[in-house]
Image (tube, rainbow, N blue to C red; front, side):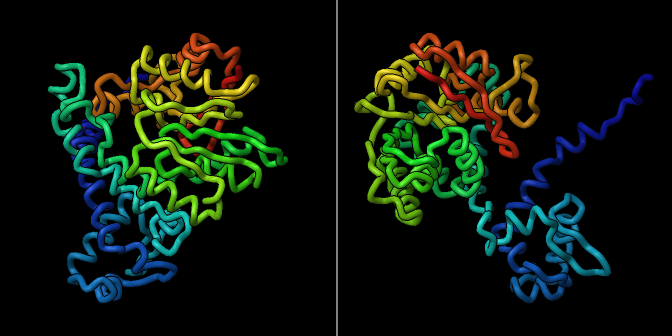
Length: 335
């Protein structure tokens, strides 16, 4: 049976920036925290925010329409998702992630997408987001840490370090550091070395201190392709990093990773892993467009792609693990 053509998808996509702007405004105003656990009117919210009632009502109604609030009898309440992730009083607060997700770099990269496709590479200056010491990665480290807590815990479970025993971990492009920090929290004998740009490492060290693992948290500052890793690591973490580069560049890095591991060591890679058709799973399949817009040659890879790269670098086998409900998946590769 044929489906009647409809302009709805076109209209919804063309106007999708309205949703983004409304969410950004609500987070900036701290509207979700102002509502909190209450069922409250627009007048009450406007009093708490110091905003006019009319504009507050319009924003609250729009947030209700797109699913961030619920409204009954003229009173607004947070949805379960908003209460968990957008109320600043929640330990799982994600509002800070907008500092990176909606950063000037990201907006600029997507503002010239047609020309990017014509050129075949990012229109951003230099090497785009992989330019040395790009300031966006400090925003990433500060804003995205809470978003990575769940996949970090799932990764730690898959690596099975909770049983104790000494272990030496290298966290390449550590960013906020949550993946290595989570391993250190689960095992008091794990020593973590985080590698990233100096300014980013300051954020990771703050997070390690807050987590109570600062004494076992060490750092290497610099470019992952240039600095010495050292050797004898039990595990090397590659979290949300390989997608910034093309296959030959990834293979070069993976050979360096393999050389840094002790015999029988593992590499743990967290990525937006595509299925072979490259259009599923849906939440990961859109990620290559971000790499097109922001990097010279980045991409997302299937498990077969990653397995092949690790094999060329000297690893004997790789296995795929689900990190659900996180979008990313985990690949553990063995020497």
